[in-house]
Amino acid sequence: MPQQTERELVETFYRAVCAQDYDVIESFLADDAVWSIGGPVDALPYCGTYRGRARIRQVLDHKIAETLGRRKIIADSFVADRGRGALLGRLVAHLTDGQTIAYRVALFFAMCDGKVHEVHVLLDSFDAAEQVIGRRLDVSHDDGEWPHDSIVPV
Amino acid sequence: MSRSDIQAFYAAMCRHDFEAIAELLDEDVDWTISGPVDVLPYCGNFRGKQAVTRLLEFKVPQTLGERYIIPDMFLIEGSRGAALGRLVARGRNGHSISYRLAQFFTMRDGKVVHYCSVLDSFDAAEQVMGHRIEVADAPKLLDLDEELFAV
Image 1 (cartoon, rainbow over the protein chains, first blue to last red):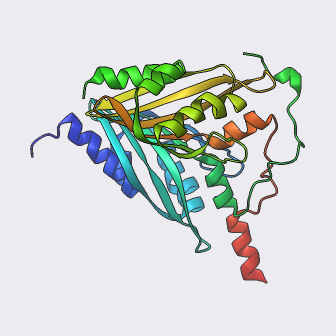
Image 2: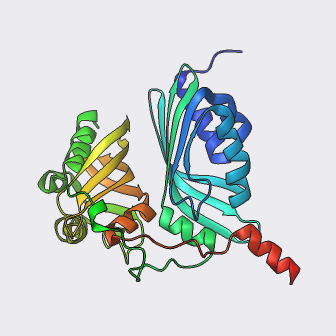
């Protein structure tokens, strides 16, 4: 069987991400891969930074699957540049209560020698949080204001 | 389409060079920034060069003062660019704001015709407002299911 080119490998990983095919995704991950998902952990428990193939698979199987249920990413755009890929799309998930949610997502990854070493996911995390918790977030009150001395002027 | 056009646009975005950005916008540009409009008024969909320049010149500075983007990853393929970075800005009260953003754009004949940005909008909203957004009292979905079945 002929070896896949770098571009083909990048596209294969991209397609696995869109299909949320965790077996294929795991097969691409380097032992020391880093996978980060930006967002509020309180509302979206799968957000955070995860290191190592086994840990990432655990997060994909449990934290993401348990929160979002059946899901896929509908891609609007995909850019591949050497061993790197960038996906812009919309994640559509069918929650365990039957509700369907959809929010915008961007995913960047870097591949070397056929292995993915880093994945960075950005969500429209405000929109995602509101949909996952099932209510509008209150942005009008001032409770929980940060102390001013913790704010460092630019 | 040359890589240099795409690089020039992204470089202008990174240093928030309004005049250089405006020079590179197509008259019919479609510009989208994902996020809650009531907290981040520069979010939304804007169509046409006039609307986008108005956004960049007037609307963004109402929320974000001096600002720039620190690039992390920048990809180019054909007429399209994609970038991952961190926006650093001064908020209205002089406090620092820093959040991650992804930018995707398409150029045609040396001009940007499509732009879409995805922010870590929860983080951005908290920083722009200057306080935390409370989500702790939100029902957990699995717990909610159990309660519903128990009733």
